[in-house]
Amino acid sequence: MRTYRIALPAALLATALALTGCSDSKSDSGKDKSGAPAPAGPAAKGTALAAVDSLPVKGRAAKTGYSRDQFGKGWTNDSNGCGTREDILKRDLKDVKLKDKCDVASGTLNQDLYTGQSIKFVRGASKVDIDHVVALSDAWQKGAQQWDKTKRVAFANDPLNLLAVDASANRRKSDGDAATWLPTFAGGRCPYVADQVAVKVKYQLWVTDAEKAAMKKVLTECPQQKVPTG
Image 1 (cartoon, rainbow, N blue to C red):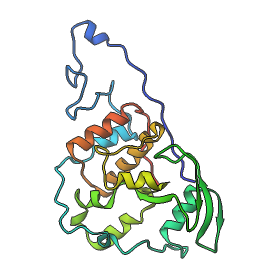
Image 2: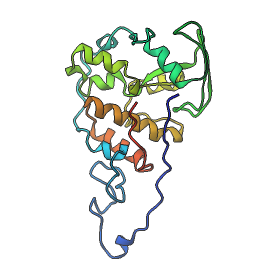
Image 3: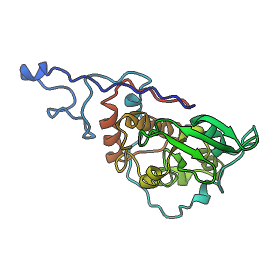
Image 4: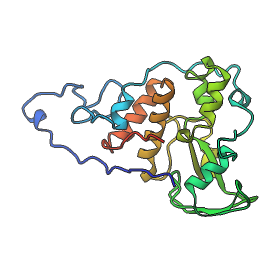
């Protein structure tokens, strides 16, 4: 089961500097240059909030040439002989029952990160998708089109970038980034954005100005949220 460390929202801080007529080092408005609320001090090392600032910022490239096949045809098999999708189901579901060595017959997704709901998984009538946390199309427009095919296939099958989620929420997300889509489940937003940051740092993908601002806005509410390592 994938484990998330969900940090509590940061407490509201006293504005002592304002009372003395001084402003903070970020801006008089209390926001940093990205437009997100400025943290009270430097983000702690190892947190997602600190890692956001290591991401390069550029405009979104054209989607020209993108197709799912650029990232391989479906799921790959790993060293255990099972497809990536089955491995993620076994990792993220509870009470898993197998159809055979690899295929998951049933299980339960407890507190889906996107909706907060518990969802029953039944093979052949599934309401659970395996989502690319950083969508393949988004990656294509922010650096992946410059990769070779081997790296793109690895990206599409990296457990760090994969998550079992509610199928309907996944379809609504489509290829959105943090600026255009966030989980409706408030408790899922911090770990979800931290996952995106981790993937983009690992693969050296860039973010847009709006995306960075959205990431920092979420993570400023949970400044101790760690960067997941997979």
